[in-house]
Image (cartoon, rainbow, N blue to C red; front, side):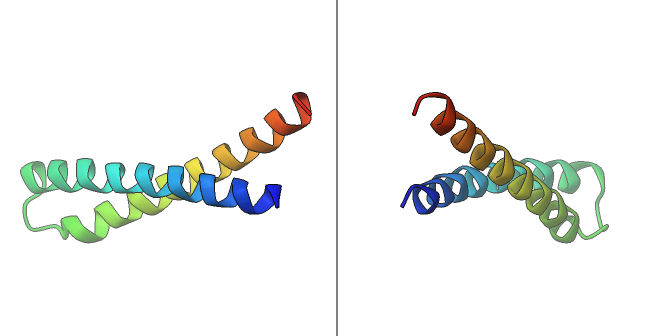
Length: 69
């Protein structure tokens, strides 16, 4: 049950971080790199941000559970 809760929490954090990274990079790529596929480049950074924040928030959840159990 705890793992499922941690996965949902990490998923929420990862999605928010990925969306923020996508919108920030898309805006920057539109202004500074006109014509170089801003969607594709922004999607790459969003995926990396999602994976990073998902993994970090999941790991922090496990560590916090073990410390304060």
